[in-house]
Length: 388
Image (cartoon, rainbow, N blue to C red; front, side, top):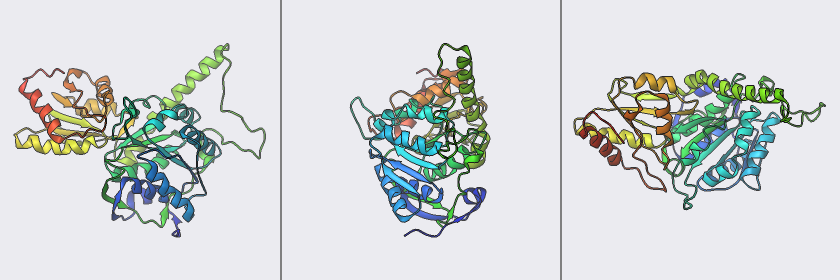
């Protein structure tokens, strides 16, 4: 049964409203965020481990919280349908995982290129080699240059907050880009956690498509533009220049999102002990494991700091440069085979031999805090030279 909701100011709902504790899974946190997000439409296609969240959102539709909801034919069809709904001026939501992300890959840069503020949750899992449904976030590395904003949740609380706040960040006229909110599957989606929730009778103000930097499709008022700024005449120099400038504008829009991420998410990253000489830098649930690793090495008389990276796109380049200016060792634990976060960090700081790309686990393996602590202690025993 739908609770009668009232629209409240976004600043109040997101930052000021009194919250009550709930003991829920990450999948339930997704549904709780959408319940308060005043979403017009959601489209679903089942794939583990995101299926439960979209089932719950289907329940929200049945209760009257959404105007429309249906199951697509496949992940690509879902993302194409969501694109159409957003082009028409709707506030939309969907979710996917692993192989579903790859099947829908073509649509993500299309969302960004047409400046649509779609919010999509990615419950990360193994993709192939061999197939796995277990936690792993290699798919994030494949999305880094699609033009979307990318947030990485450590906990169910992060997942709730990032999804709900993503709408207000994405819909800023100067931003107006899709947002992917990522969580490591099962570790967040299927685990119960304490999550502080604002009142369920509050919801965000409706999306106002008139504030978009590009006009919405209007089937009632001709001429309706079939595609957005197609610029497909490959023999025309002007089309090249226009496309290049449009790419630059998408990158600039992501950069303009920084101040809104700072405001609503409290920064692109968080730091524990900013004066430390040794840091663990992580994102997602690797942050939780890193917190435990810090306790282990402290028992051995070693003090270290922690850098929790919340925003992957835009990446906190300037913040990392400043924080690590005096660091001697930066260990980057990850839930993937490629070490994409370590590569990102190495690309923005100098003297990047300080950065240790690991430990890394994948294929559904756990990441014991002892493994992170062991990596730090081994590097320290090696003296002042930290070499992979």
